[in-house]
Image (cartoon, rainbow, N blue to C red; front, side, top):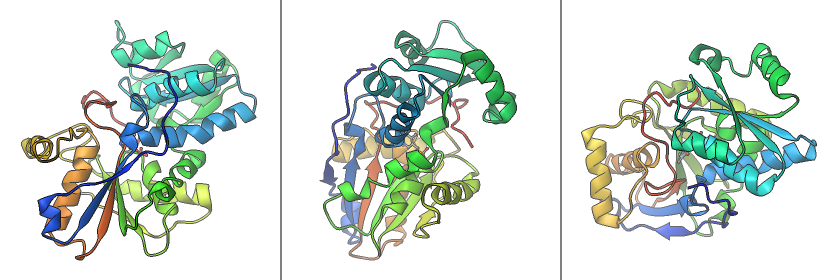
Length: 310
Ligand SMILES: *Cc1c(COP(=O)(O)O)cnc(C)c1O
């Protein structure tokens, strides 16, 4: 865990032949962003890149960010900061109380030099309020503030570069959504006639459409108007599962030899197949599914209290 090497870019695009799509005349391409680094989900890399360059450009010697105790984002920040910003201090503001011994994510963060501090769950909801940020500045000095999940204008712009890496024609591109930053970027990077579909992994995620809208306005000045969301594939909420989802993952592995990451990407693929079954894609549609992680790669512990922001 925590290999401090640089990502391999761009990730490959692979065709996946699935009978259930073939009978509907739907083609599926997988954008294998899970393959760019063993410890960094692809979208986390795209969101971090521009932020780290900006922190360095502004001359910051400290980068502060937020995350749950099992956060993919915290791990990604540690790995990327070690590779790209050698000499820059990192501070991780962790949701909830300290638990000792540290779990593997936080142990790894501390071993790589990250300083940790904790915010109780109530304060965490307002973690970027002036009162809390002032308190953090008093404790750690000046810092570059990176939002949870890396989802700010710079992060979203990084994700907008992904569609140009796909060298085959396609009609629809799909991704799972936690904060919605990845969808906001990918949709903005599409050509005319293409559209994006987001699959939120949280229950009650209708607020996410406003978040994606706000992120697109912040990053590009306008909503690209070419994306929608499928809200019905959360399977009970973040990091929750059901027997149907577990069967889907096992069956998908039998068919294709791919171990789907259960928190985000299994819900994405389940949604795609269910929508195709319901004739949501016209015959002849080519769909790209963006995979940011696979089960044997990085992935949060499936603990229900480790929620992403929102
Ligand atoms: C963080 C993450 C997402 C969600 O991305 P958002 O930009 O927050 O919507 C999806 N898949 C994986 C594997 C992730 O780590």
